[in-house]
Image (tube, rainbow, N blue to C red; front, side):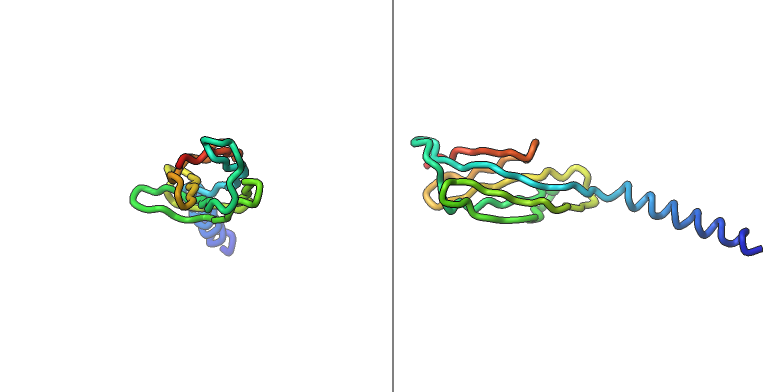
Length: 116
């Protein structure tokens, strides 16, 4: 009698766990690169780099950092989870006096050149 009750309960649990796992979107996020001045090619320090998930009607910030004195940055290494599998992981580069750039993370290495 115990096995008759246990089997449906166990199957229900496994089914719910599998559905929950498949409907969530969990990705490892990371990005590294260099930010330079487009006109001079020199590295830019203190550029704010923001990693975010672009959702349908909002942005979900994952991580932020500043470039170092030679324009290098490193972000992430964590997991991003969202129920929306269509979300795109993006990077935004901002520095006073320069145009803001937003680019998708494709392979984890993103080098950009900012324009005045």
